[in-house]
Length: 211
Image (cartoon, rainbow, N blue to C red):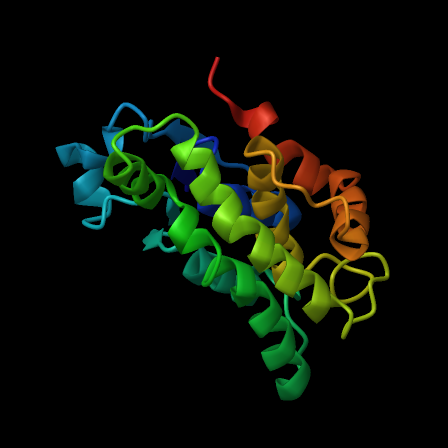
């Protein structure tokens, strides 16, 4: 059965799912949903996901939404070991991932940033200022949390996990919006390790941007 990912190349949530699909070795067909053009508000996409969000993943006869739920499904069905099995370690690693996916990402997604832009009256640089306002403090906190784990070389050990999958899209956004992360050595070390991993490299927005 054909696996289909409805995504947008710059969407952080879609980026996460692309990484996980690559880690699982699952071939998939990508169907772009252009958020800038408003494709996510069209009837076709609202039928897939009434929230109008990406990604949406058709896999194993299921239609799944919400990137963290999709990652959990892939982890449980494909044995990706994205989180430790031991309950305490699992909770700690999940909290690390959620520090980005639940706390930073929602206030920096396209719809929220666009609304902030509108509230500023379209002032030059307003969107970038908004992104910098939330991304840098969030990543500073993440850097401090990382000190409680052993980067060897990934966030929580020697294999990529949920935190790495959440971190890389956020670092992409940090670079895009010119957020200073030069003083976050742990984050930068994880970024170097993930960038060298084929599953992460193939999922990068520069590799998936529609022609």
